Image (cartoon, rainbow, N blue to C red; front, side, top):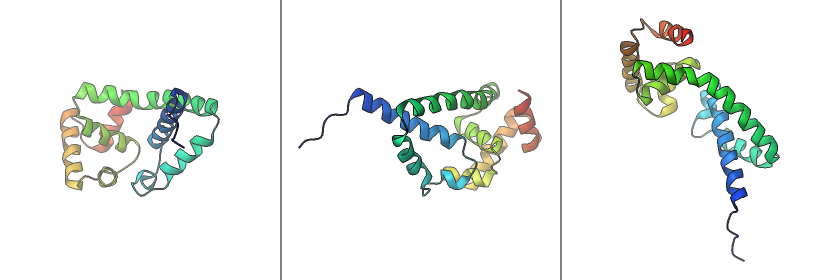
Length: 140
């Protein structure tokens, strides 16, 4: 028997589940959670498919609000200082407590590339170092 075409509701549920997983990744405190061989993203996808649609929708809405509050300042900071997307990703990682080598490993770039991004951020922001950069970020 041929598979039925997915309905609009099925597609919306799948989109919500995917967004749920992506939002949870933003709040991940562990590099291991985000690694390519981590079982967590797939497990979260499975969990989200079993949650009632209303609960998944509510969780996503709440996480969007928190993510916006948490990351909006970084976006504004990046825009004000002319940071590239790659530099902004590093900034987000630093604010989450990752080191440049951990960030580089997470993104699959060389540590040297990560260090170049770090130096460019410091140059563009006139920060004296990573601690000064994080202080600047939190002051707005």
